[in-house]
Structures are given as C-alpha cells and as structure tokens.
Image (cartoon, rainbow, N blue to C red; front, side, top):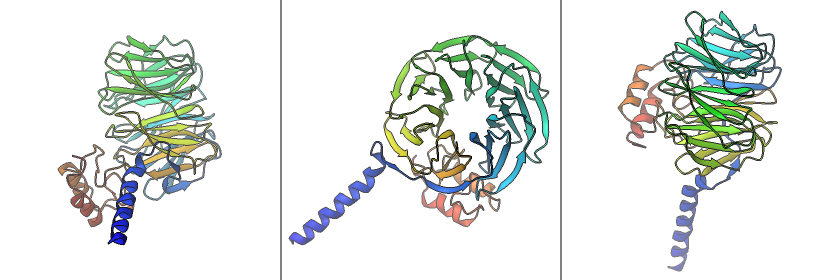
Length: 381
C-alpha cells in the first residue's frame, strides 16, 4: 500500500513539474529548431515573414536580401542592388512586395514573385535603419540615421511627408494595426507616436536610458513594446503613453522585439547577451530564455503570422526558424483559438505547399493538418 502511495505521489509531482516547467522564469535551453541556414556573407540584421507564412526574408551586412522557404529552409532567391548593408526588410500586407532599407541611404521595393526591383526611393541623407508598410499596403514608413521618419506612397514611390522631432538617429519604425499611428524609436532614448493623417506628433514616451533599437505594436494596437540599449524591454499603453511595465533580464542591448499574433507573448532578442527571451504580456513573466543556437548574438526576431514559429537573424550570418513552445496546436490564423476560421484556412489551402495552414511542418497542407485542427478544436477559446 505504501509503495502504491509513493508511486502515485511520484507521478503527481512529475505531472506537476511538466505543467509548470514552461512557466519557470529564466528557464534556459536550445530552441526547437525547424531549420538553420547559412548563405549570407555577413551578419543577418533583419528578418520578416511573408503574410501567408510561406517565406522568410533576411537582410544582411553583405548588402543582399535573401528569400527562404519556411517549410524547409531552401533558398529561393537573392536580391542584389544595394551598395551597402541592408538594415531592415519588410513584406507588404498582400505579400507581393518586399521593402528593404540600407546604409546606402535608399529604400528599395522588390517584387516577390520574380525578385525584380520595382523602385528605389531616395531622399534620406544617411542610412535607412527601418522600414514598415501600412496595414493596407498603400504607405511605407522609413526611419533613418538622419533623424527623420519619411512616409512614401507605395504605388509610385512619391514622398508624402517627412516627420521631424527626434534629436538623434531613428532606429525603428512601426505602423499601428489600424494604420492611424506610426511609432518611432531613436538613439535620443525616446519613442515617439505620430498621427499618419497629418504627421502630427501625438506624444513622446520617455523612460529608457539608452538608445531605442526596436518598437512593435501589439496586434490589437493597445500596447507598444520597445527594446533598448539600456538592456530592458518596456511596455507602454498607446492610448495615453503610460508605462505599463519594464521587463528586465537581458544583460546586453535589446535589438529586437516582436509580439505573437495573439498578443499573449513578446519575444526579445539580445545581441550582446546572445539570448532570445519569451515573455508573457499579461504580467511580464519571463517564460523562456534561449541561450543556445544563438551564435554570437541575435539582431532581429519575428513571430510567423500564425504564431507557430519564430525566425531570427544572427551576427554569425545564420538564419534560424524555430517552433514556438507556447503555440496553441491547430491555430492556423494565430488568434489563440482553434475554431471554424482555422478549419476554413486549412481547407482553402488544402494541397498547397507550406504556409500558415501547414501545421505539422511537412511542407504541404493535407489530411494531417486537418486532423490537427479537428483534434484541437476549441483549444484556447
């Protein structure tokens, strides 16, 4: 009888540990890697997933943009034309274009289907550190070492407006999900929020004690995350600019931040501490620290559109795609709930190669993906 009690107790403790293990703050280890790829001849400074989740773009110190197939890491093509390093890449919302910002002071627009250069946008007087499409794809924002944010019309490359107010380099720009605001992070240690319609400065967020390298809106637009030279990540309420919380744990500059599509997680990449961290947004808890397979540092990180994966670029020229351990299995659209929309997503993509509906990483949307949705139906809802 005593043996049975101890055995039962052992099973209970083990079960409890398995349940709590992902919640242990600072838990370290190796990410669950789908693939890693070399190919760039210099540090990978920026990564961006296509909206359908089938491609990953990377921009590099070598002056090129590379397109990778997400399902297996195959190199699709290399885009050449910049004359200096590529600091930022971003897909248009419809996935037809890629924008790249470079130290050659230009922004380039490329057609994804064949890699053709569509246009080159000139006007910045120093390197272009960040590019971001508006949610409807009609506008492109660019931030530069010249201290300005520029708004461009995508259809013809016309410069619409130049936003001035930062007193040092602009290192990151991001549109709000509704397209009404632009956030900019700067070496002047501030984050600024601008109204898109007229370029008016809405507010300036202060609190960082070092350069702000990365800004990112939550999917619902209520929060803004910022990563800084001061080794912290800050979460701000967009409506009034209030600082909600400061996430501490990095021991080096925080180069990149990215919300998961459901808004529940925030990923941060530390270049000098060589870690990737996953945080719970609701309370700021540190859920996971990856200190392996991070090379000599991580410069850029982004969740895939359905939240199943995250990709990151490393100083040692490697591109990595890994599985998100907190993803809700079967959630094809990334909203955290497995429902009819996910079933429709799989059925509409049935037979296609890869993408958001490829839920088991086998490179094709098939019966297995349908079963994953059905088996997990209702999860997270």
